[in-house]
Amino acid sequence: MQSTRAGATRREQILKEAAQLFAERGFHGVGVDEIGAAVGISGPGLYRHFAGKDAMLAELLVGISGRLLAEGKRRVAEAADPARALDALVRGHVEFALDDRPLIVLHDRELDRLRDSDRKLVRQLQRQYVELWVEVARQRHPGATEVEARAAVHAVFGLLNSTPHLGLSGELPGRQATGSLLRRLALGAFAALDGSAPE
Image 1 (tube, rainbow, N blue to C red):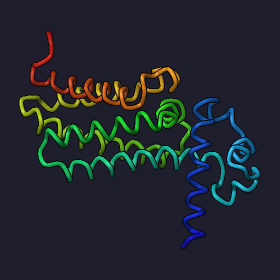
Image 2: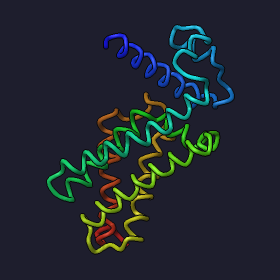
Image 3: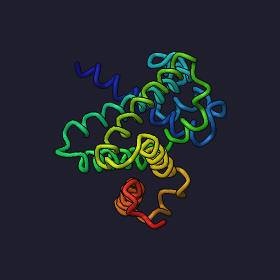
């Protein structure tokens, strides 16, 4: 059991370093040897964990899409009412946007490099994630049409997923302050569904 966990931890370490390198230099700008060096193993040693760079990219993008959906469903299920459910979704996505900025860059730049089956799976998981948000947004703001709620959800995703463009981590006002600001901005965007934002 311990060796299995150690293997899982090493895979996670490889994926984290691969995501960072892919985001910084592009998928084709990074070699297997460089990923191996970043985690202290030989390039060929990586093949004990992954079939190659394509497999790493697929696990990164399919993996985060699945985790966002699962975590979103959990947060909604545990919320006492629609207001808390929407706030919980926003908080969860803010955490992702602050902690996994390289994955946002990867998704924007490298999604088309996935095999068709993996790309379709990512899209399917993302559609389910969007629908979860739309349903909760409409419960929280019942006066909004489905079209309006969907537009608000996509606008909020655009806002929250802008974190790679906010500058270097050292230039931000701090994780907690940045997260609080993003949360207020996102909830403010949803409040506009009730007409409570300025014209």
